[in-house]
Length: 291
Ligand code: GLU
Image: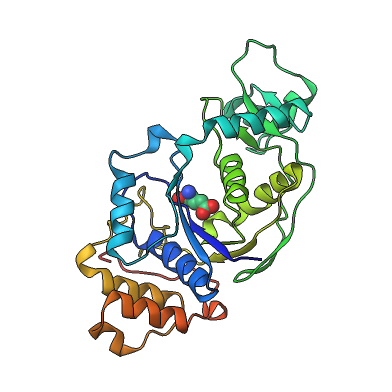
């Protein structure tokens, strides 16, 4: 099997240290396997997207020496493909329309877990609906970093098309990982509990299952995941080398002191040659605000 990895940022703002970790880890794992590394922009949710964020991400990756293979794929160009697969899943009965709001679900079951109400009470044709996929089982999986994963929560019929007319992340990511023949997914552990959902969709659609490796998520001093919402600072291109070395340290790769005197290219080629996925810690590390 040809190794193909990817980095799949959502353009909700500039890249921050948390995104850099996912980019560096997925890049190095691919390069250490002489594999390909693809870039996919997950621009599925225009209201959450920041103007110019895609160009900014592309430029930042270039400045950080993280060069991808082939064309950049944008999910906003792929709606027709998602729609065909959505139709396939609804017409074969694997997915169904659901008109329930969050409040209705909570009121009925006192929990946010969907109670499958619309399986038994199909909404009328005119009602504005989400589409949910039937899911009656859990999918334990082996993660290269986090080990064996089994979620004790009840499996849920999850949303694959949103009531506000956007395709859901779970659907688009599964279709695109197959379309781009992704063999290895290296990403943040905040997406660990999305993985069984994606495996479910892979099985429904006859796709192959990639290998998964979920890196620890960087947090700020308050223990919050670095993100646009927690006001994580944008990566500073003038500190690119320093930040990559920090990312290597966070990922347990023990970067040698001499790297600070070299170029980004030298640093990334050292890191590729010394890449050890087994050295990545499972747990979240704390990083300081000012990074
Ligand atoms: N687009 C997602 C994000 O930026 C990541 C998707 C993935 O790696 O599966 O959080």
